[in-house]
Image (cartoon, rainbow, N blue to C red; front, side, top):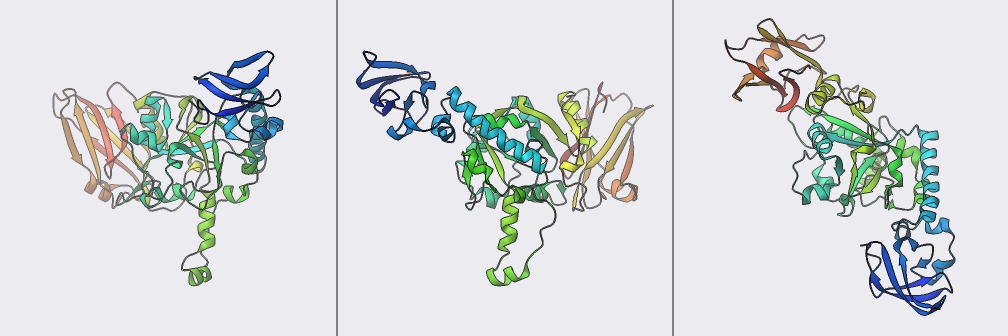
Length: 408
């Protein structure tokens, strides 16, 4: 039940306005006892959707224009059609602004590949606090210093960016040589349709939701006034040595980073049916998704949504091929960057479920194509042994997969 309504609370009916007291309440109906009769009735039983049209919290709210009430979440939450239409008008104005001026193409949620598999299996994307309450396993890619200072109510939202290549993604994307945190080894972008802006009680942040210096509002009109040019800005942020000397830190750089991490917030959870694209950084990641979840018309490979074209000390597989060539497997791994300083191994599983681990680190580091970062390994199974599954790991991160009777 909406926590703004409770038995014993006073409301105002539009006729009069007339004061009344709530005497009964369920998920869909309100029973109100009036201070004076309306149409010869002292007790009315009305749909909860009458809030904002016939019933009001305060006397002064009765005469407010619909557009004004549409900016107030305490009325929006009850689903009155007149109020929702007025709110949708404001939301559409915001989307139009973002599209026309900043080439907005949807709400961006980045997650690690393992989390992506769980999200698709569950059929919904959950907020951080709900994942923890349910005890669900997940790859935590957050900076623990930042998340430790994030307000509890922010973690009750599913969090989206307005644009790709945020400073947060730049910091945690890719397989790091030491697997050090914050770490999103294999990022996947879930690009959600703009229509989710019409969900009840969504909020807008003009910076990273984990910062106490950020304005978070449910008022779309306030969001329209955000510094969207700063939010959508990308490219290098130069350090100001004078600010460091004066303040001990670069205040302006911090503000720009905070702004580029601006967020759109949806309460608690959202279904995967609102995803309009599932974007992978490489063909290798798309192949694994197909093997594990089946093909999907939403799957695309688009490096421009990631930082992979920048010189980063991170690595991943651009592509791979694993297939039988006569009596042996031919395994070709195409790396994004030089594979040295990473560990490499294969895990084989035969038809009886027995596993075998093959270390490839020395071979790959010594024999890989130094120009194209490509390596091919030939594997001959023991006579009579039937291999059912081959999985490749870089720094203990699963990165390539072959399964019997399935193509890579």
